[in-house]
Image 1: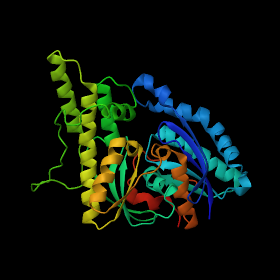
Image 2 (image 1 turned 90 degrees about the horizontal axis):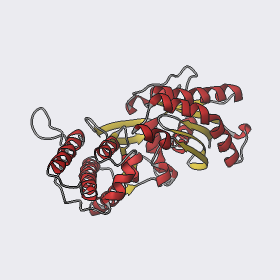
Image 3 (image 1 turned 90 degrees about the vertical axis):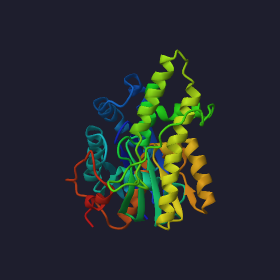
Image 4 (image 1 turned 60 degrees about the vertical axis):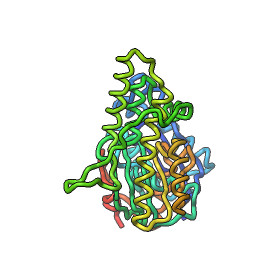
Length: 347
């Protein structure tokens, strides 16, 4: 059993956590949303500076909350890919420094692997194989989880990620940033059948459609044209109905693909991760559809859906328990597929 201090700075949350295998001993998350709201999205340079200003205090708070000292920490972990390069460098440099100062093993963690492990924090008995539906601002993927570090991508978005589509549509509707929570709230007051929107099927070269891949850029464009038409007619925007129709289209797209993929591969469990996993419509619809096919769907608690260091620590513990550690020469990468996870370690 390993106890790991983990750092997550891939985007706009400065997060530090201490995790003992699948038990969270402390979790500190400093969100930068108020800072970036004035820009309508994350500004990389601003995010990096914010991480620099808050990282040391977050580390101190994590140790204090867990009531541990450095002698009780077995390893130091940090997200190394994918993400904003400057932001990742802040967390990675801090983790490497702590590793050298306290003579602890260093573990670099793939951000998406962290989202897979978020479900383990509330479901500690969960074991592979299972299907992971990762839905966030930057990623929308269906992942066959075979073992720690062993993943196969079965489907993904060909353009905008689901969370990115939420943010862009919210901007079209002048709802502010981030878009996911406000659209979710509005959708609960609207009619999801008010407007018919495209589900974003991905065509294959020989005809037909890819069963697991998704596309959301066309959906975003359809909402734009609908808004323009309504405004041209002098109509006030029915924001609740627009939000509900948009959300219903995204949710049905994700649900249909996830259920089909699980059935086709004989996987009985679907674990959902990422910021969009907090969406109430997705939780309700996917649970209902899964029950019809006798499948189990697992969602992490809301606090572990968005970026956090507890999920990074959970993944790091599993790797450390298996003897996987990273070199102090490991660099950050803005893009790195899940199939390359084991390249981060010296086994």
